[in-house]
Length: 307
Image 1 (tube, rainbow, N blue to C red):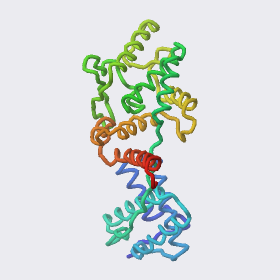
Image 2 (cartoon, rainbow, N blue to C red):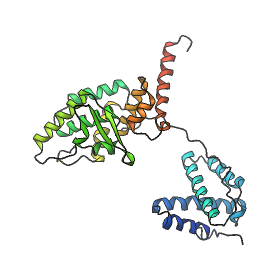
Image 3 (tube, one colour):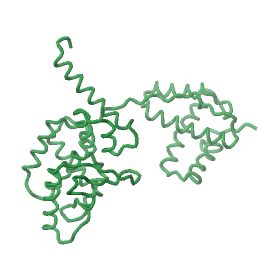
Image 4 (cartoon, rainbow, N blue to C red):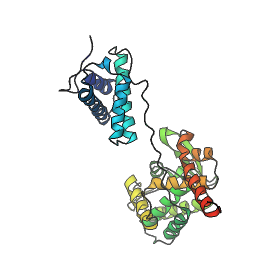
């Protein structure tokens, strides 16, 4: 007998059994389950209003595609549409596995392409100006933190979470590198310059003089406690706001983008940049080549007689 669902109670029947599966077997978070629920209810409301369908087996790929087209016509972002398609894929896969349907209508559904936004980064001139400003800043502890945060973000491309958890023992002063524990507990080595080591040593010496209790974390607040994410974010945001006002974003991640973009713009091998950033695949790193291409276009336009 065909399985029905009732739009008066949208989460009854196959939808509810699927949500229960996500909750009790997949152990998804409540937030994720609500997202699935909203996507499915939206789709089934469309089915009822446009096709008056009450049987899952009657849903074809052309019907699903018409829903996707409607979403696109409503100017829903491609990223959101793709999430909804993913919700439907999971739903129908579950129904297929449960024997409710004999084939999924999602086989020929193509997700719309997501336009890649170029990473926001600080140009090299503004980067130098920010460093000059930080070098002549007063020697209060927040200014010292702003300086070392900026230096380490820009010199290493390290993530915010990695930097605030960086221990003094992870810095090899003789071999000039830091050992970083990244996503998935994957360790990577990032080389640093003698100049960066000098800045770190100066910071450590002042930390020992100012705070009686030793802290294994490299960076500490003016209270001697480990630097936390919001503290670091606000300091970087402040200095980027002063020196790079044209940026859409002013976060520590912008300096990670800046690190990668400046390397690629100056001819660094993309695989090497991938390793330094701790990316799992080269595809995640390739977005920085777009900024290099934009730079080449700018040079071409300014220099070529026929441009």
